[in-house]
Length: 424
Image (cartoon, rainbow, N blue to C red; front, side, top):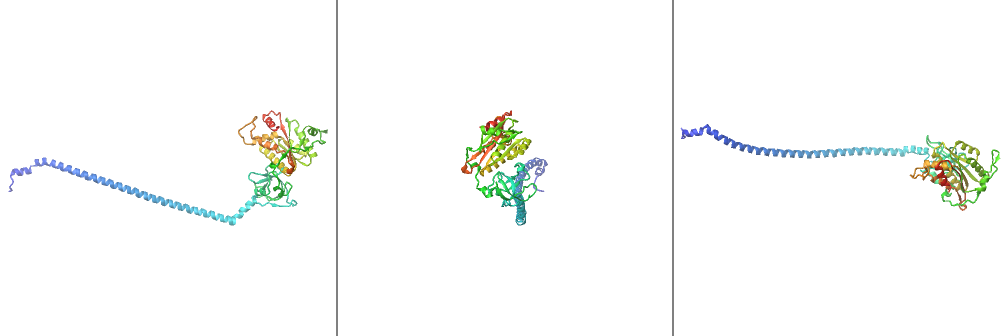
């Protein structure tokens, strides 16, 4: 046996002692183990979180790099495709240009020639069979113009003839010029035939049109020559002394402005016919132009049947724009005659209705006079009446006389304002 006593063995092998000592030791060791495991697990979690964050940052960075690379690559491909398509388009346009220059240009030239825009007008002799009296030129704002027919009252129609801007500039043509020449074939539907040959401008060679003066630059002087009106006129088998009374009490002079004032239905048309006959009979050197604006159709026919001068009319069933256009064409035609040193007489019936038409057509200025008359509507009627003048003989002479009628006692305040404006 060993040297140990039974008590020692009992103490060593007493299970109660083991139970009392083991919990403390187990508890201590457990706390130590738990603390150590806790520290180890915390370090593990921190390291795992750091690893995860580094992985996520790396993945984001790689994603951005990859996405940016893909996007830049896609943009580069898109630009390359667009450049390729643009190059093809530019190449197609270049090929189309080359085709136009080689073969398609001929088609464009034919179209331009058919439109009459680039047709070269040639000077020709007035004795040529193709030369005819074409009409009166009206120059538009674009620089080109159209030849209006007298049969249509110098208003736009399907029979108009196109005149290019280069031709107008080359020969110094103006609105109101009377042209004689030849016309080309009509290009297509809706297009006017072009002027191809020019023989006369206002019955004179085209070269003279470049040397004529401008109407607005000619000096005006007081009228000094009387228009004799008295003639052996009979109305209904009785002598008519209307012209004789005018010669005695209010004689007309060449280059004068005159107004015949009367109410409606007072017989002013008969007075105008008497004056027209007196001018044609006693003053054959004067060109007589009778302008009827906004008049009744039967009065227009009656005036045309008298056979005195050239009647230019626009009946009241036409729009106001036509009344104004006819009046302006007539005035410009008379101005061209005066520039040539001729004496012209215009009989206007009536200035009241013409002012009404301009009041309808002109844009409102925002300032309305008495009777609903716009302040700007009388500018062109004043220009019409103010064009009458006697030209200084040192500048070639010539005169423009305007005899107009004015309506009064119509019950319209506008008519009264118009009359007061022009009576001076």
